[in-house]
Image (cartoon, rainbow, N blue to C red; front, side, top):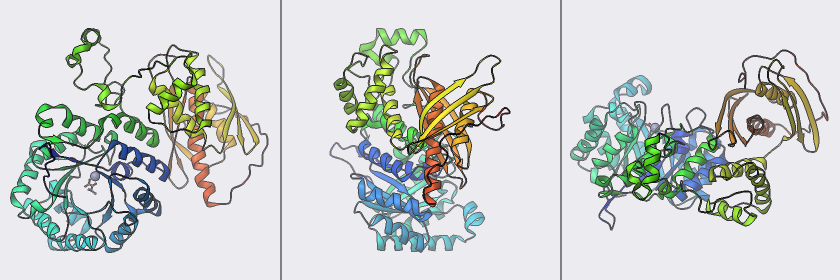
Length: 545
Ligand code: KIV
Ligand code: ZN
């Protein structure tokens, strides 16, 4: 990978290295199943990122398997695996990667005095030696090797230059400069990249990459400062997820480079911006981590104009949208459907729109989504793309159910003690419970808990609406932790938030049951019918709803 490759258009091609499946996956709540990681990796390939960092194979057998499957199944981008600077970690990472050809081994080692002394307890010489021997070992196993001097922005500059020069000599063709703690300011970070280019004699033999964290809200600004000073790869994540405050957001970096004329004249990425919004929604869907409404580019309100003067401006100046919009939503795939879907739209129109949105669904799934679409359309004028996509997400989840919702009835309001009756099905058995709680959702969840006996705790419960208005689809995200501290995310959509709450909770519990039963032989539920009543609610659950 040459240092500053110019494309035919004479622009500098900036490579996008997506680390959602690694840096974001290790953040609280970011854990994904192998199937979810594959879904995200396929979508990142559609987004046309250059590199997907698929995981940390040495960290667990699950990560190893996920990286290997992504290498085998996802075509297009280079697939990278992260490794510690230890021979056994490098060998294991190479083993996961070598089932494919477009792969990269990414080794990292802390170089700052704080990390050398406080964490590694090694001298400058020892750290340098470890970095060099690790890059050499990695190069014996995999052709493309990236090296990251972790906490580079707090590393003594002369020492950083020494490490960079030695690791390039050892065979690294990409040198990544991480601002691990998100501490740098843009002018400083830009200067660091420029000085490295001026001071390291063999720097022309490697590409410079930047990896910025957002602890001070400067990840995107710092990454851009890096690009403006010679970096040709940016490491980023979807929705800006990642350790602590997250990483630079792929949607921000790519849209900025394509929006501001001064940057667009000089730089280009290979990203298909039309896939940005769908990628954002998918990551939100599989992690259950909501996107803040005012988030740049992908937040729900990023293109919503509500103040009178703006709405007026947008309507009057449709031809000259630049008055109030610097980015057109269509550019990132947030275009409104050409076909307005209403209760009179037939199957064909709905299927056509689903295909346009990129869904490849079975006949059974299409039929079921169409029935649910009709129920929704009957109650409103128009069904939006977002709502349609929620129905799809909900439907594809249903096919993985162990316990399925058969019936629910919740009574609450005024002085009534909120009480829920729930009936679930499992393998043809009908299981029923009644419980009361301090709110309707609390009662509902207690009734469900009386049926599904799996060790867990509720970590998070979140409600949002897919479109505006009281008749909008409500979406509920639930996160539960199991006995082994694994987090399971469930999401449910319905026009009734109590029903959406039940679906979300059931989905998360189904995942926990699946995992719990994966270790022991599957038991058939014994009870065929059960009633449970509790007068006094337990504390510590989501509260009133
Ligand atoms: O933030 C960081 O320094 C990292 C490295 C592993 C590149 O994530
Ligand atoms: Zn990081």
